[in-house]
Image 1 (cartoon, rainbow, N blue to C red):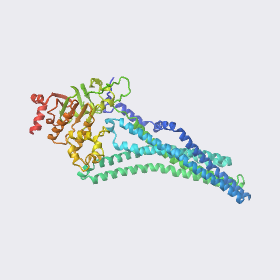
Image 2 (cartoon, one colour):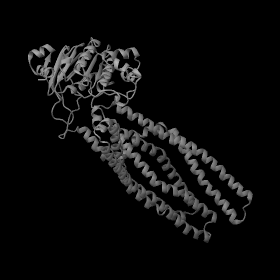
Image 3 (tube, rainbow, N blue to C red):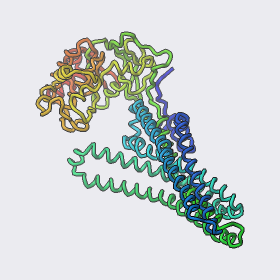
Image 4 (cartoon, rainbow, N blue to C red):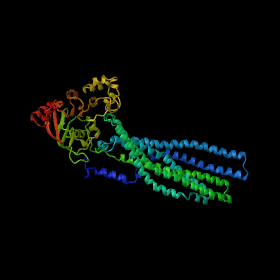
Amino acid sequence: MSHSKGGQTPSGENPERAGHEESTHKESPWRSFHLAIPYFKKHWRRLALGFFCLMVVDTLQLIIPRIIKHAVDSLQTGTATTETLLFYGGWIVLIAVFIALLRYFWRVFLLGFSRIMETDLRNRMVSHLLTLDRAFYQRRTPGEVMALTTNDLSSVQLATGMGLVAMVDALFMGLAAIAFMAYISPTLTLIAIAPMPILALLTRVLSGHLHRRFRKVQEQFSHMTEFVRSTFSSIRLVKAYNQESSQESRFDELGQAYVRDNLRLAGIHGTLFPISGFIGNLSMLLVLFYGGRMTILGTITVGDFVAFIAYLFLMTWPMMALGWVTNLFQRGVTSLSRIQTLLEEKPIVETREDLPGTFYPPSGLRGEIRMENLSFVFPGHKRPALRDISLQISPGTFLGVVGRTGSGKTTLCHLLARLYPVQDGALYLDGLDVNDLPLSAVRGALAYVPQEVILFSSTIAHNIAMGKKDAGREEIEAVARAASIHDEIMAMQEGYDTRIGEKGVNLSGGQRQRIAIARALLLERPIIIIDDGLSAVDMETEHAIIRSIANYLSGRTCIVVSHRVAPLADAHEIMVLEEGKVVEVGSHEQLLERGGFYANIHRQQTSGG
């Protein structure tokens, strides 16, 4: 069995993922509604109470026209007195108080449910995003992810909040109003509802257009969000190249496109709402004409006619709400479909925490690494990034890795850190196939300093202690000294409590790299990998730091990748990569004696020849 998911289509795309994405667009967006079903099941009591309060409110509203009918009829017949009118008015006031009270409760229950669902979905999305690996974040931009967790979730919240309330309210109120109207006059009721099929047909036709145009709006919002994020995260480069005007123009173009997409969407929504109002007013016109004649002829009383008009007004809201509810649900369903697509994403590196056959040594990993014919091809590429690498690294070994740009050094680090899948039988830790080890166990045994240093907008102490939250100041300072950054930190105004800004914007490249190394040292893990993590410092400083951390990491496996060979002179063993293959392995002295690739690089870097 293989855990590598590297099968590709002729175009270089993963067939499983490509098929999934294709089916996502072809299937009905309503397929994603099953995401919401567990929330309805879990909170059914809250929903039941909320809808009960809502329907009682609607019922009380339907009683008021009956009270008005009796009041009008008593006025018409001359039997009305001040006391009877006060009696009718008192009932209306009492009903209004109950309506206000129950409206408060249905809002707490129903709109509160939509907020609970929004929060749970957001937490679920963030938890899922944390399980996804490098391949996903190479395909999806942070702007897209941010749009999903903000704009799309808001649309889902509106649909499951006010959208759901308006739908149930409109259905119950509409049907109940029709029933009360039919009680007064079945004939007049049929006349009043005659225009409604036109609205139903129009809503069905336009709902598909709403879905497509809202999806386009959300996608354009994602592009805008990503553009803003990337612009401000690279603001120093933008200013250095005098590109403020260019970025402003590009953002304006994206904004104009977003406005155009929203106007097209508003065109659909703007069609539904006025037509709903037109049909409601058309019904009113028919009732005024035919109902007025029936009142004149004595078929119905004046009170019945007034009550019928009141019920028609109550029914006009459901007709008007139909377009709005359709818009809300289409937005919500479209956003839920986009969220569903995100939640269906799977990491390409399997996590085998609970699967049978997963092993983990009780005492933890010691740091022995063995590679046997290790090869790797990036998804979408034909040329292997690594080819048939075989090497044994004993615990406590200091291994240097050198090679030209693109030779596969960083790819090897990524595989060791389990950021990409490997074939069974190609990579072993302490004699165990990494595919038979829990992913958390492999990464928990390894401290990795990548080429691109990631720092958070917090204090220096917090950044160093990121992987060990309970670390004391003495421990933090000790690793900072080993990384040759302590003195520079103490020279800052607030020392270790200095806030460094987003991505360490207040620090130099060399300072950021050394803080990242200090962070890795603090973890005290059996394996540490530094992938060209000192490229921003001069050769002498790099050499001094490597010697310092080599002493600090005595007994632990240390793999240091560097473009410069001189700082690796103290390594127990040096591996030279060229076009993804191991071309030389040996100590610094042995490789110099052979006069091969390593010796040539050493001569060029030390003599400038």
